[in-house]
Image (cartoon, rainbow, N blue to C red; front, side, top):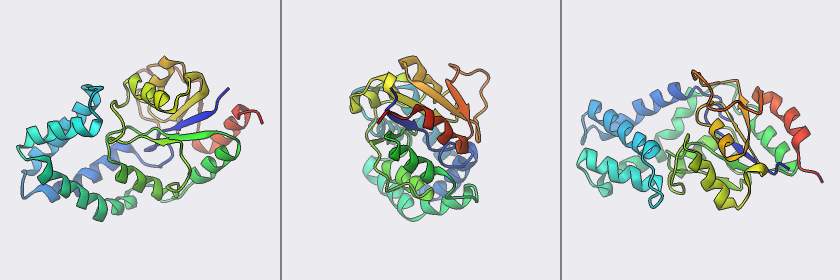
Length: 240
């Protein structure tokens, strides 16, 4: 019986093309480091350290620790000097990036999540854990979902793996102490989100902002647009 719904954020609940959003994120962030790092080097270092989190997971280190160890080594600056720049950016400039997401905000996300909660599901925000909590909470605020009682929200501070590594999903299961058969992963990226199936989780591919991939790593159990999801969940809701 399904009891937990794992939701991807960007391109699933949040109506945005991930590459488009990331372009504007980099454009806004880059100038903040110009006094330390040339722009072309900053992009290379940031993307390299992000890739490090995704591809070189270390179970003994959080994604945050992996990122800072690599980014400091690449740039030659200590975390103590770099982190306050990131912090200020997320506090003062990151909220303005909301203008680059779709105009129909807040959209159907809150209504869908509230309906799922009322039906007895527990909710997890299973966004790729490459951003700090404040950036993820801010994006949840853009869809007016920041105050909902999520069972867990993945961030780079609390996770040791990233998508598409199946261990990312296993870590959430371990934290919540639930079995894969209790969970449905809902996302728009066939490569990152459907790997949950390898653990025995059910999957649902959201097609509004579908990420093109040559071949899905695993066929989804369900596929629909976000507005069609409540109809699907109605048939899957926990009994009682």
